[in-house]
Image 1 (spheres, rainbow, N blue to C red):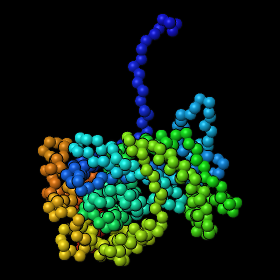
Image 2 (image 1 turned 135 degrees about the vertical axis):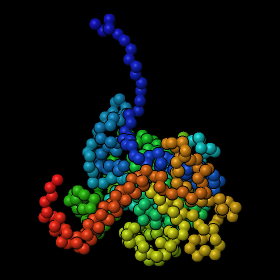
Image 3 (image 1 turned 120 degrees about the horizontal axis):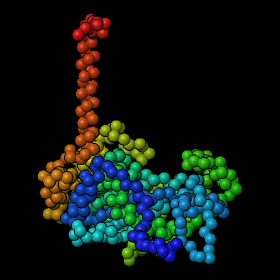
Image 4 (image 1 turned 180 degrees about the vertical axis):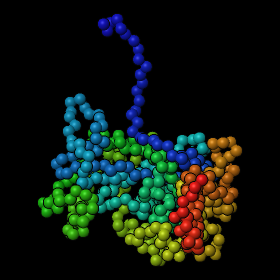
Length: 439
């Protein structure tokens, strides 16, 4: 029958998409802000650098003698026809490595040029004893910048997806950015982030596909520790339990680091053979505790009461008056951006003297907020809003929050009036509650 019933199907080869995209009310607003940032970069391109940062998912590491596939469970991998790829395929492992990716973009000559070219740096952190934090990320970024020509530029732009370690509304993230600003003696630092569910807009996300190629057909397992430490590790199933064991057992943390060291070396060698265009990908080691503490000490120049171990939130940050003075003097914090700009005064005791020439520095301003144009659904060009006073009132989620707050205030006022009325006229209130009305 197949000889008589033939035909053609419209087929094409596609790469399976694994990114889940969900709409958010601020997506257009945040995209306009990212365009503002890129146009700002082009305005001062001879004096600035643009860096995109992101963290990749955890790469699982198996137990000694039992390697675990580094690729996602169920994903097919390419192997030779005469080979078998036999590794564990577990959803959970006790140990793993977290990838941090830094993408220093080669700035194009115009806005329509390619923003997907530059140098890539990948770091590996132990998920148990080297947990991610804002200050940890900024310390590694600082060390990476020192290895390049970027540290010579007095202006720095940073773009991220707004994860917990890059959420610009968090006080600790803001303090980490201030640390970087002080350590590099920048004249201007601008950090922006994507809208929720829109991390795919971050150019560094496209690097992940290259790293995934390197992780294909790779099984990872840590080395054997001493019998004593292996027995202790076998008792734990959670990260908190492993950290508790390390606090009670001397040498356990160092033994874990030693057992994971060959895995890190293997992944470093794999990533170092990968390329973005014509440039090889570079790797770096995770920042040590001493590196992080040394990086944090730069904040003591503005407020000696700031302690690295403290938990900083908006509610208690007003206690640190000197740090609050610096923020009010140099910083502008918004929902999707946070930037720091020196005042330029030679006699200022809050920020340092500027590095740029006076004529160039006078052109700098805080990054503007996207402002709607007369053309419905569009925002004004960067050239029309740069240098003028703007606000966040046009951010869609800001309007919703403001409306909710107004309703809450109205409800509180109504409740307050009712309570006051019941106190002033208690007899009338009783009469109202006990009376029957006929219509």
